[in-house]
Amino acid sequence: MTATHESATGAAIAAEPQPAPGATPPRTPLTAKAAAELVGTAALVAVVVGSGIQATELTQDVGLQLLANSLATVFGLGVLIVLLGPVSGAHFNPAVTLAEWWTTRRGGTEVTFREAAVYVPAQIVGAIAGAVLADAMFGEPLVKWSTHDRSTGHLLLGEVVATAGLILLIFGLARTERLRFAPVAVASYIGAAYWFTSSTSFANPAVTIGRAFSDTFAGIAPGSVAAFIGMQLVGAVVGLALVALIFMPGRDAAEQPAA
Image (cartoon, rainbow, N blue to C red; front, side, top):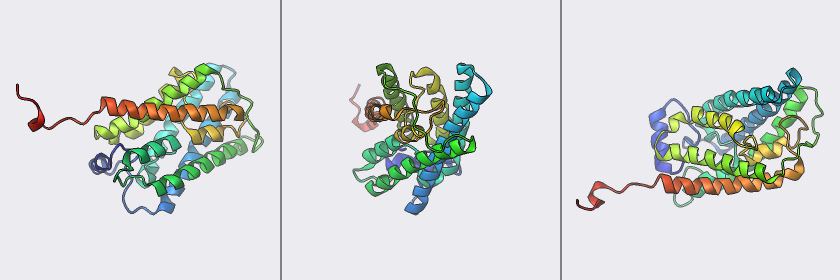
């Protein structure tokens, strides 16, 4: 989840032993990275779907259900980033992985094309497995397509905003060498976005696919998945554009015009 290899490396060294998304240590075997992305995404979706099921069983108040769902996601995501950040960068999100590859493709070594090509399928498989696991834990059908339609325009706009904000946060932290705050910052942002976006902030193509496999509180109808993913990718592009605009590299003092 870094904007450049140089900034990510410096941030990772400064933050030791605390991990951060994108602060991927060198020479970590690709199989270990892929496993971390698969397990991390599976755990994240299990938290999202499982807490949604639990919430609906405990209360009929939709506000309390969303509160329980969002709090569980905040804590779960924060823990997963801390645990798996040192291994894979704790992306758990194809939009973040692709943005990372895009920003480092010109000579960067943080996420190569080969790694991105492995990460994304691992994240998708993990998301599906996480949804099935959550359903199994609560005695739901292991696979039951969601009937929760989320295809209206204002929800799609919410996904653009949610994803753009997430990308801006992650890569902004990288540009300012503050990735040590990523576990708290990213988890806090997602928790807030549950409430301030109309879509409740999926902001993640893999998680979107996984949530289609569960006809529960956190589900999304299969017919809504493609549009959600499309808007998430648009949001990632918008987020990268905002990073480039807001966090422009400054000029050296020698290059500044004379007063």
